[in-house]
Length: 141
Length: 330
Image 1: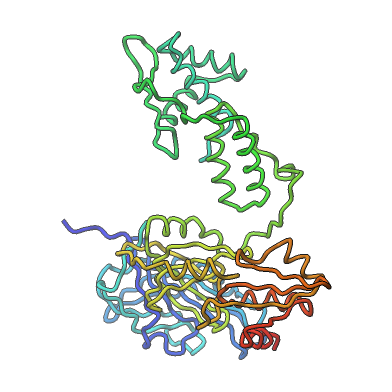
Image 2: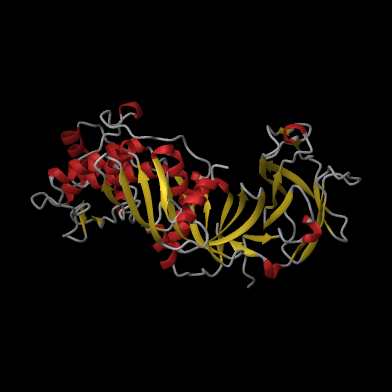
């Protein structure tokens, strides 16, 4: 009988194709039977007055390469949902946040996170996030 | 969920009834009557059934009491006749000490530690028919006041980290470095939680760094326990440094060495009263000033402490540490 795995954690922080100078930086992906969680870290910059702001569109989705199916956004922790904004107070602020989506299948896969299909550099679009089951570590519940 | 004060009192009554050899096999009604007689509280059948169930539960939730019902005698009894609740023999002094410790811990107000410790101590006191009165926050040990800092970020993970250290479980978390202004994903095989100056640190073998590292609780986000082989590490060196340092941030490359400080007569009073480390040796001059000698790993915290004292304390040797401390001013 196949062993049932509750949650698998992937460290994707070293995947250059997604994190090359990205801000927020995608750090971890947690696959479970109920949800897919993506963990990000954002570091405010001097480009914006008082560090600017961040927000995430509730229309954001995940999509496996080569598949039309979309895995929809469920909830967020640590970031405001558009049109609300999380305003920073200084250019030295930082924010850790997590986004939850419908569960991706447990398997080797490459997927994108799309906030805006015709996105600008200001949108949080991440392409080619690669998960290999052998790299996943089971999380103790 | 912590058991309330009345429950502990009822446990004590139930225990004494079950151990009473003159009137063995008490019935449920007799237990209810005994609670009324001794505690002057109304107890229901349902409550006592729950109490017995709780007492039978394994430690730490219960007392592992071997309570059984005898159909022939129609009453309750201990299957192990030698069993007694807690089996402790506490003197009046012991009880007073426990009460004082509880007051101290509550005064310090270390959040969940305070809660867990009080709960455990209530169980101990219950076994000798002493029930600890939970003082109201403002009344807690009115004769005792300690510095109690507001809750710090990351302390909410204390129990998870303690479990990870105790049960040797690897932890994944996201770390934010204040200096480098960078987020990183870390997998740590932790073995020690250390508090210094009301700041908390987790020590362990970091897979990313390939060595023992420590991380401030305040910079750790979303820790998760991992199901993977635990990487045991030799803790000797870490413990050696921590035992022989003031703080948790040794200056890289600096070995344990003799450090001499020149201290004004005013500051000497404080160092006499509050030694900085067990290795401290104080040699006083006729004018009241002193030379302090330590055998320590130099740390950032020691340098900062020296600067905090201003003109009253200066590093005499080693020279490099004098310069290091001066450079921190910049």
